[in-house]
Length: 124
Image (cartoon, rainbow, N blue to C red; front, top):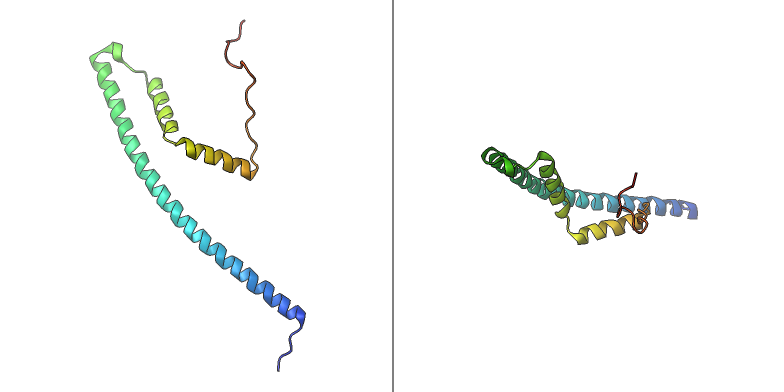
């Protein structure tokens, strides 16, 4: 008949505990990867539709430039509008949640600008 010491039982508990932790971690990782894959697919489809709209906007701008040179929209303005559009696509609640998660993880936070910063151009 086998005789087990307390040390043997403690080692067995450690091995079983670690096995359970690894199993739970693998299961959570699998679920998270599936959720991320679905999110990536949704984002890719949104990006494709936005790129389609962007190309249509560029065509319209080129047509307007060909018809009337006063209506010409410089490429820089189009790029600025696209950047603004992409920025506005993220809901404010998602931004706040991301900022809070950043704070919770201990990331350095931006310091607010001093009062009056950027209101007056530099005088030379």
